[in-house]
Length: 295
Image (tube, rainbow, N blue to C red; front, side, top):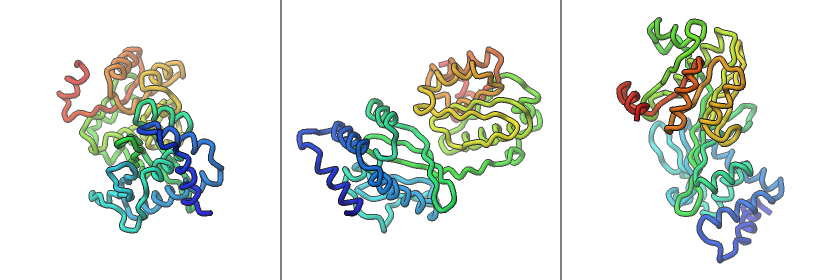
């Protein structure tokens, strides 16, 4: 029996009276109790899409929900189109395939909040593939976007910072203070922050705690201990992760994004306590960043 036949048997167990998001929750229970072999085969289908994504030099993949029309979509060189070779999937089939990617705790978070940011990694063809993912509801069914993370960190010197700015970013020269990397979506905030982390990792003996939603780049410890704490997986929120970091003897605390008032206030309080803090803010200018923090 093929994996598609076995998935059809699972879908056939859906009671007709179960409607809306509860249908997805019911499918989640079926996935949780499914045979390990079936779950591996379902996982292999999605991994095939993701490997193809890398081969096609695509930056993003979208699948599931009403919006995709049962097709797998790729963004290649800025253009998003459906894969002409992908089969047409039913909404329940994509629900099953997407639910199978999650842990039990991630599924519960998704059902409660109707959205889940997470990272996803797997090994294939002797290499590691890593993605930033966002799963959400689209008219009572699941949809997924994944962005390929290349894992290459841009050299710090290539960023062209003024020597005084470069000194301020280094723990060797400045032991405390808040540094914000700001900009619009796609402007390179995360990659710039990774370069700053990597520069400190190579130049100073220290302890760096990174709190992200999700964790995109995993830094190998060189001269620093580097902790990666993903919101929803290792810690409940940016705020809690930041407060907990204070008890972990950090030299640098990296907050992936200051996206809400609680996180902004916590970052400011941690900075006032004498720590070196880095974060990002989704703003278009320095003036707008100050206005956002004050507001």
